Amino acid sequence: MTIVDTPERRQLRELTRSFVTREVLPHLAGWERAGEVPRSLHETAAKIGLLGIGFPESVGGSGGDLLDSMVVTEEIIRSGGSSGLVAALFTHGIALPHIVAARNEHLTERYVRPTLAGTMIGALAITEPDGGSDVAGIRTCAVRDGDHYVVNGAKTYITSGIRADFVTTAVCTDFPGSGSLSLLVIDKGSPGFTVGSRLEKLGWHCSDTAELSFVDVRVPVTNRVGPEDTGFLAIMQQFAIERLSLATQAYATAQRCVDLAVRWCRDRSTFGRPLVGRQVVRHKLAEMHSRTDAARAYVHDVAERVAAGQPVVTEVAMAKNVAVATCDWVVDAALQLHGGFGYMRDAEVERHYRDARLLGIGGGTTEIMNEIIAKGMGL
Ligand SMILES: Cc1cc2nc3c(=O)[nH]c(=O)nc-3n(C[C@H](O)[C@H](O)[C@H](O)COP(=O)(O)OP(=O)(O)OC[C@H]3O[C@@H](n4cnc5c(N)ncnc54)[C@H](O)[C@@H]3O)c2cc1C
Image 1 (cartoon, protein in one colour):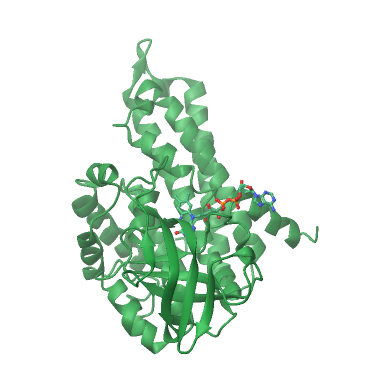
Image 2 (tube, rainbow, N blue to C red):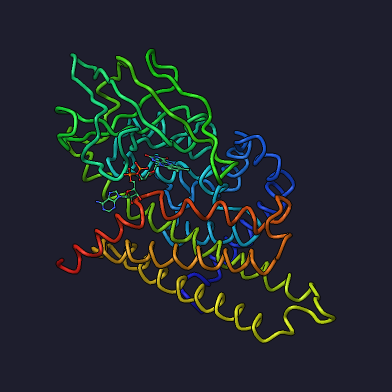
């Protein structure tokens, strides 16, 4: 029995699988076309306790730890969901943890509980039009004016930004680019806060993505997460969870593509024989399976160390890069094995091929992960 194969986690898989089968699969193609998932999906997921997995019951969550969240992600994708769906439905996984960690009662009651109950949607806004990798270079600024901050600037590529009721926003509380960052929770509808039109993109079609603009937006000081100028550290601490989530989406997508490819290669015949009857095809499937299993084992190992509180920043970066490289290779091979059908919108593997491309960009790019790894090596 592995760490993610306990009786409780098997139950969690079963719950997730039936949720995906009943509530997601009949509608996913429509949501991909619509460019978003409905709010009602959040409420349904909350009612059965899925939305709150990984958050303590004391803030309205369902309990469980990082590995439980990973089990949910694995099972959503294994059951025919997608990384885009995970991004859209679980955006609170990046929007809330800083607030929870700050143990702020006011912000917990106002934003965390309603979000975990599925009645609010949150987003996290760090990236700006001028750059996303250089977090310390953020130029959106918040200037103190009595018991408010006045915020000016812009954010881009923000997941769930179209639908979000509030945005956990990284702002500079000194001069632009100074690296003195704070996090402010900004309400949709605040005067001067504008949400741009839905951004069209290669994949993650069911996950809405937005540009946000802030012009003299007044935000109460009580909406600051943690003390002033601690935002950079808070962002870096929570990046570990986001990166492991993306690593999980990567190996889970690879696993789903292995499963789809095996099924296809059994059913599809060429020159009078099933594809799986050719040694070259069997070996390709064997390699896809082996690489996926190795990536999963490594990500699980690093996640266990993170859950145990070990300082494994370098290993988290390596886990993300290993899982993403595996996913990129496997989805490409799976699409190729599907032939012309793999290129069709009706083929599930086509969606994974497009969705997977984001995993090496979001939450810190492959190159930025390599910078962290090189630093960990003392280079
Ligand atoms: C679909 C989608 C959803 C997203 N959701 C969110 C969200 O919810 N919230 C949010 O804040 N952001 C979000 N992002 C933004 C994402 O985190 C950034 O795109 C990412 O961090 C890269 O930043 P950038 O696009 O500005 O690229 P840049 O930082 O401009 O980098 C461009 C290229 O240069 C490389 N590069 C940069 N610096 C170095 C260096 N020092 N050495 C070597 N190479 C380097 C990068 O790896 C990249 O290949 C999302 C992006 C996408 C596409």
